Length: 171
Ligand code: CTP
Ligand code: MG
Image (cartoon, rainbow, N blue to C red):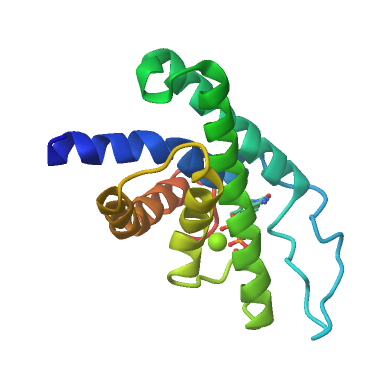
């Protein structure tokens, strides 16, 4: 595989995780996952930025992206159940990673929406890769590539969402 196709397949592979991570900005809101509960440090477990609707909506949208991808490149996935399983695990993993990130942000006394460089851009990605690993994985070169470029994709997507008025902060 040439380096260009290797890079493009890495993007294609991770796309459900990107969508799952980005869509809660649009579909989220309502009841927070932590139900308002606090940790033993007296601060919120996760905060109001992590809602059930965002979580379930993100997993659903990410999995649907995988469904569409299967119809475009069936050979990349083998069969439909594999494609759906992979997309679900990438999406679920991305959003679990996002929750873990918020848990640590609250422990560090960062308010909801405060930036945490590294955690915000890579936590969801690493978690998605770990969850999806049993179904289908990338080469180590492709993983390194995604770790390097994803922060820029993340910043670009958040800046766009900010300019479109979907988010109140550009990160
Ligand atoms: N969101 C949601 N449910 C989730 C994840 C995100 O509803 N499980 C929505 C929230 O409106 C959130 C927005 O998407 O404010 C942006 O997500 P993110 O940047 O991950 O959350 P933050 O508000 O920055 O909160 P935190 O500081 O906990 O990361
Ligand atoms: Mg944020």
